[in-house]
Length: 291
Image (cartoon, rainbow, N blue to C red; front, side):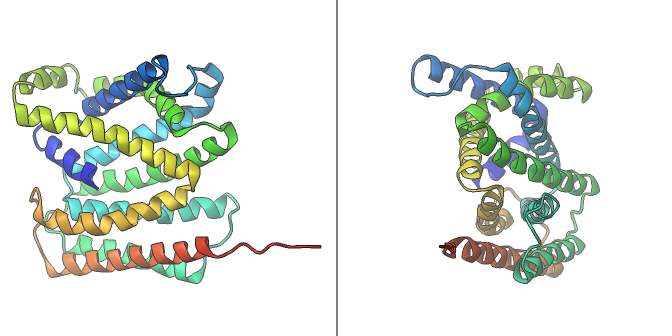
């Protein structure tokens, strides 16, 4: 929850999102590497065959974060959270096409309420930013894809969350280097970063962003491997309830309108209902067939 506010705060001072992302991946790979060398982690060394298998995970992860950061530049936090709450819909659709079956009526209705809330809230969003909305929706697609791939990779390759993080960080460098050059961030982003390094508040936010990003990725990969991609999105929906409320108060950028508030309430109700239904489904005892 705090990561959204930290990213929003730093992007208000430093708009080069791709450079921030490559810094986070660099710190992640170095920490895991030295942790393995010093014996603090049991992760294995870099393996080319495993890297090839995990390349799609890395690609969709970075695409998700890149588009999410881009959307935060133009979308206020409550609307950003409402849009990202569409991720369970994406996971359900992906599960349906992958053979997991049709969702229940309650799940379908809750997802429809989530989507309806987004539409109503968008109609009342005076700060509507078409580019920001497009980036957020694209991020939803990429997040859905990489969560499904992480779940599959953890099951098939028996990799820990730290190992997936390490490969994800290493494989991210070529992709991110291409992006910062293609988008024109480099070399201006580095010169601006060094110039702002004299500001203690900026450094504190930057360090928080890097550290919290590592913690978030670790726990998210771990949750997806141990549980499922769907469980990870459910936790995200519940987190969004508190984030939406705080988003109206912190960092500004929200012009309150009746439609906006009503839409966000509907969106939140749908998210809570969806989470409750999926929790009840997961908590049901499995039937054991005996002969």
